[in-house]
View 1: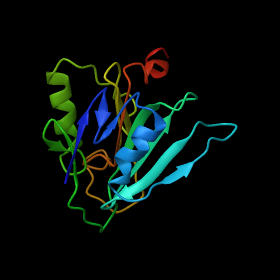
View 2: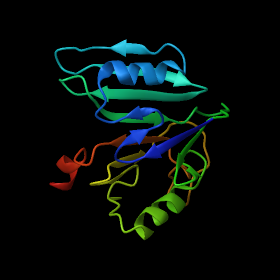
View 3: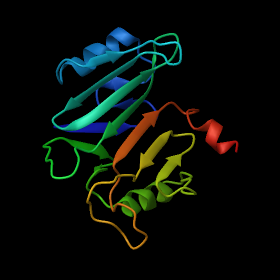
Length: 162
């Protein structure tokens, strides 16, 4: 299966801005998710794993989906599910290839912290953090991303303002 990323509007079957029940119905096709919260510190979240790809759907205080984060299956684990951004599997395509293509589109890529890269205004966030044994580039970073987050356009505004 392919999970298509369509920033800043959707990640797989989850559309950003959708109400909680709609998002829950969308991810149930992958199996029964865990619901966390709301708590005094956080709004509700839906978490789960589909074919080894972990996911979290984040909600605001009004119970609308604000972001979806997906994680690679992990060291030694295989998945038949691909997480695609413009035809590239974000967990197997070299991160530098994906970032170069984002820049070619005219998007600003903030790679000041190379382990936590984001694209403001789109909003895409990528991490290259792991303690697992994975192929690494000349700077010691994992060659491919280990997670990706798709959110609404203003999600990373707080980082851009710093």
